Image (cartoon, rainbow, N blue to C red; front, top):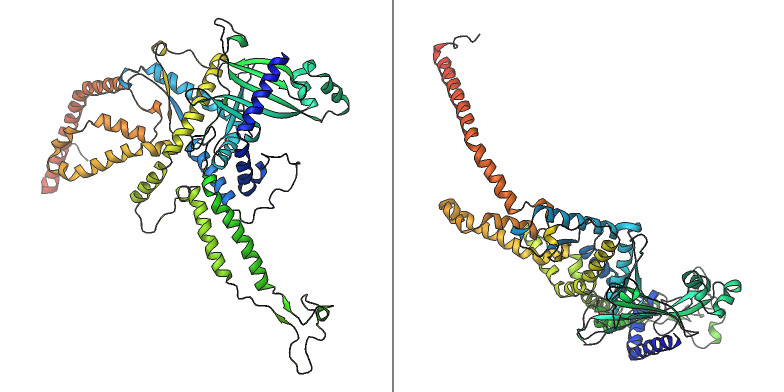
Length: 542
């Protein structure tokens, strides 16, 4: 047991040593853009001042705007942002299969919104880390008793990752602290004697622990305990090098999205890294402009010597005795440096614009030009949203896909999902995203259909048979899907055929009833015509 603890601590220290230079970069970024996370290279005291190096908040605000934009466009709590689909062709899907998929989707969305919408609160922290540091660490822990999932965003400073042969993150070491009281509540009497002694006198004293999650080398088939789970979990008391507990997970509990891996490193790159030179320059320029503006507003005074300024009252309403000589000339003059504060402000605004562009400010704010039609505005918005496609793909692949699959597995093991229909027993289920950003990626198909129909309208008025070239049913389904219409609102092709057959059977009887009504109407019109031509009222009409 002690050998396992020592091996885990040694591996974590090796991973920490490999990213030491990256910690310094993250520390510099955090000090300028996210001061509350600026504890990568050293630990800060709670409540410590962290904004001493910030003279302009443009970068921090832009990062928060981008994180909030991702939250609203990808995982908005007010909208459905994913749905489950089967791998079957749409024509082959039975109605009970569609209803089951819709039911499971609603149950999973309700689970994400449960527990005071904890997921949506924590995922905002993940997006903030993602756009600032390039890597986010999200943890979902299963409560086997209730089937609930507890979500949390782990601080990147305390987490260390490793990849498998497919460049997928499958190992996370988290080095964190617990108070003696928290540790005893978690592990009870398994805690070290030094921690148990501190429990009585110093219950809030902090101890360091290590949580390691990695793929299990050998999974015992047929076992329902930790040995039969795909991922091993170890908790270690670092100070006493003691293994506290060993468990497991059916699915990898960490989701580790990365903004970009252009540098081919283990950790991701971020917009903040690209903007860092401009941010540093902007802070230096802001500091200089502040000093120059202060000199211009409250300039220093020119004096003959130091003795001449003793007792000088420069506060508002103060009287300066001896400030004039016998000829009435001033003895003291303000120093005007003729510094161009306006030029400094102009240069600062250029750097601010560069920082905003690094954080996709134009995409999020949707700055519109005047005198645009609604169609032009929608086209511009869709074009800007499509620019987020590469980053959306990484977020879906490394965060949303594994998160939703883990949520599905947890709810299935807790018997919180209805039995699957027979049609899906041998088939697969895929995830389809219907968030605003995902819909914008697919909006091109719908826009192409609309433009094609608009272009064909003049020709269709002359020769209506040209519409035979278009499958109207397929066009309607594509339009509905591209605009995010819920799956349960679309009838299956079989249901549409059945409905049309029923309408065809009812059509003759309706036509006969319509003919009788038309005959009566025509007879009435004839009577009315006779009355208007002087024939008087029909017989029997008073």
